[in-house]
Structure formats: C-alpha cells, structure tokens
Image 1: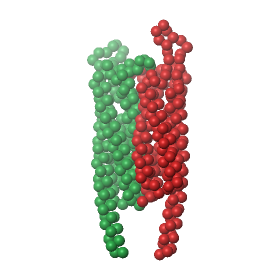
Image 2 (image 1 turned 90 degrees about the horizontal axis):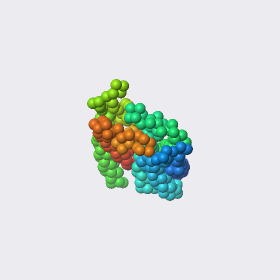
Image 3 (image 1 turned 90 degrees about the vertical axis):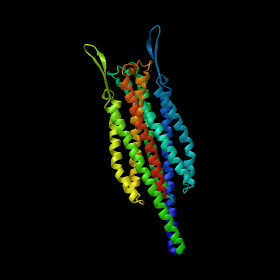
Length: 184
Length: 184
C-alpha cells in the first residue's frame, strides 16, 4: 500500500515537471508569436510610398490606410500583440502553479478566438496583396505593384509575421489541449 | 469502502452519459457545419452572369474562376465538407464508446487545421467581395458589382455558409477540449 502511494507520488511529481516543461514551451511560443505580430503591425503601418511624379490634381501616394483590409490587418495584429503580452502573465503563472486548470481552459478559449481573428486578418490581407501583385483582367483591376514597388515589398513582407503567429497559435492550442488532458 | 466504490461507479456512469451528450452535440455541430460548407461551395461554384451587352472583342461575363481567391474558396469548402463527412464516423464512434481518448485528440487536431483553412478561405473571399462591392479609388480598382449585380449577390451570400461553419468549428474545438479534459 505504501509502495502504491510512493509510486503515485512519483507519477505526480513526474507529471508536474512535464507540465512545467509544456508551460515553458507555451511561454516561448507566446513570445515568438507576440514579436511576430508586433513586427507585422509595425511593418504594415509604417509603409508608404510617394511616386516621384504627379499631375496637377493627383499626387500618387500609397499608404496602408488606403485599403480597409490593411487597416483591419494592422488593428488585428495590434490587438493580438496586446493579448499575447497579457497572456504572458498566465503563462508564467502556469509554470509556477502546474496544476491550474480553470485558467488553462480560459486561455485555450481565448487562443482559439485569437487564432480566428489573426487568420482572417492575415488571409484577407494576403488576398489583397495577391491582387496588388497580379491584378485581375476579368474585373479590370490593375496590378498596382508595377508602380508601387517598395510599398508592395513591405506589405508582402509584413504578412510573414502574421502567418508565423498563426502557426504559433495552432501549436499553442494543441499544447494547451495536451496539458489539460494530462490533469484531472 | 464498498460505498466509495459504488459512489465512484455512479460518478463514472454519470460522466459517461454527460460525455454521450457532448458527443451528440458534436455530431449535430458537424452536420450543421457540413451542410453550411457544402451550400457555400455550391453557391459560389454555380454562379455566373453574362451581361446583356457585348463588344466585338469582349463578352462581359463573370464566373467564380475569374478570381483565384474564389477558386480557393470553393476548393477549401469542398475539402472541408469531405472532411466533415468522414469525421461523422468518428463522432458516431464517440457516442457509442464514450471513453475513447486518442481519437478525440486526433479529431481536435484535425478540427483546428480545418478551422485554419476555412477561416483563411472565407476571409480572403470576404476581402475580395468587399472590394467588388466598394472598389478602391486609391488603387483605381472599380466596384464591379455596379455591373454584375446578381453575381455579387450570390458571392456575398455564399460567404454566410462558410462563416457559420467557422463558428461551428470553434464550438467543436471547445467542446472536444471540454470532453478530453473530463477523461483521464
């Protein structure tokens, strides 16, 4: 009987250290995702290009807020960065207190919501960036990247950070699911 | 001691019936999601409009495969419909065998991936539909909906099914997470 108890205590302690490992991984993924979304938001928000020629009426200038999709992209990335910074406190709390369950479930729900917001922002922006690069002959939409070269490079690059963060969120959700399934 | 065993057996049986309830809810959500994505795919794929006037060289005709984003939308919705139909077998299996754990974890991983694919397809299509409705003066993209009225109505409507399915997937993931956290 005492052997059984000792065995159980051993299992619990092993489980706790494995959970701590998962929590540390969780923290790292959150930091990577936060840096990625912050970089995306800054890269998109600070880009602008003014063409060296202009007519009497129009100055050719491209900025992110010309397209509502890019504004959504910047706002979504900023919000997710804020959320990730706040969620770091939870993540650190989970490293210290490995048997917390309620806060883990709360976090996985918020992570799923954040994944949805971020994926939609990144995909919508990607659809517009594709259009800017290739244009569409059927709809008579021109490829504006032929004029706005450096603007297009920046907006294409800024997508990368968001998609890295999307992958991180998928890993975070799977990790949390795994961590929750270990506890009872 | 025998009271303790009886109590435990009672808890397990109660837990099993609660799990069965969750599995039935899971099945219903999957059917709703499957019908939604199928409807979306069909609505988008079958839409086309030919304008009643044409020049010598161009016939004005709009179809979903003029825009790569809409093709992605149709393909993604079709794939997700197929996945949902296949996953019904798992869902039914979970109703019968309430303490299955491995297959639940497999399903939540696949659901998360499906959520990612579907959200990106729906958002990218929404970004293009928005552009078709409003156009963009900065980029000199015209609002093609001014010509292609019924085409635009169909593509806008087909988005609804996808977004319903996205919500269903979020609920499915939360439900699975809850069901997994109950077992050990």
